Amino acid sequence: MLGLRVASHRIAMSRAASTTAKLGCVGIFGSSGAVGVEMLNCLENRDFPTEKVRLFARRAAGQVVETKKFGPITVEPFSEEAAQECDIALLAVSGNFSKEYARKIAGGPKNTIVIDNSSALRYDDDIPLVVPEINGEGNCTKPVISNPNCTTAVGAMALWPLHLKYGLKKVLMSTYQAASGAGAEGMAELEAGVKSYAKDGTVPKPEVFAHQLPFNVIPQIDAFQPNGYTKEEMKVAWELKKIFSLPEDVKVACTAVRVPTLRAHSESITIETEKPIPADEARELLRSAFGVKVVDEPGELLYPMPINAAFKDDVEVGRIRQSLVFGDHGIEFFVSGDQLLRGAALNAVIIAEQAAASRLG
Image (cartoon, one colour):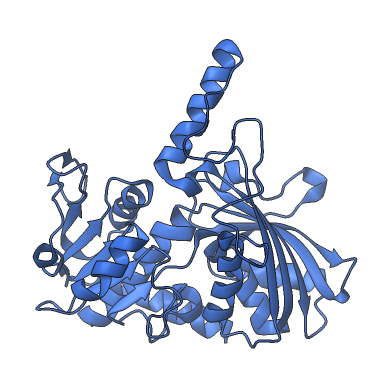
């Protein structure tokens, strides 16, 4: 089953990239933010089949962005009419914007497909929540499609092939999330704090994060919920269940921590499975999984690290070992993945590629 999904994904990708037919237009909304910038990079780097790209951002409207593939692009202010002139609309915007406009943009004269990176619509029953290598088939041509949370998407790449073969019973995750999870402003605050400390030994009062991030870790991402978990932690539980179609008796729990790295999230994951899961066998299975790179040579000090996973499409997986808690029915492992790519922009663009492949035939 996994092989079929991987094969069908590769066929769709090659069709989208190699055909001479092209879409008329892809729009990026929120193009000046960290995710929007990476969406444009992905469209260029992956030779996306579109005649042109239009960029929309309120604060950057009027600025000109130079691109190699699409030439100079003048950033535009948003309007529903302009959005519906695009075949595909990639939204890297706030949840409030998505709630108000995503469904309004979808359809129209060009049958616009909206791919939304916010959390606004992820849990709506009529909106598919998609990691294309997992559940893209039949979902990438829907009018509105949601991207998962960045932490969910990174972990899902390793968890899915394991679930297909061994069946998940429990997922216990702790995350080490980079400043870029809070956008360009988060990265800027971390860099400014480190520079200030190097200059005079002080760190300015934080504005983006709840506490000083340089030389610190913060065990809170997003607001606390009544059950004591944060919303970021609950997103992982909610979203894995929806993407994987997990039954209610499969339990997922997460502790999310902000760490002072610039880019790429890491996750320590322990799983219990229905079937016995030998660690060596799981490692070989992950070597053949699409979008995953096994980095697991402890004797050579090789394992996933965010500094190596940054700016890479694949999620790195390593430290794969038998669980001391769950024995033959469990393993523990560590993953690192670029959350601006796999966890956001790349995921959205691969969804768009599958939509384009379907539309272009």
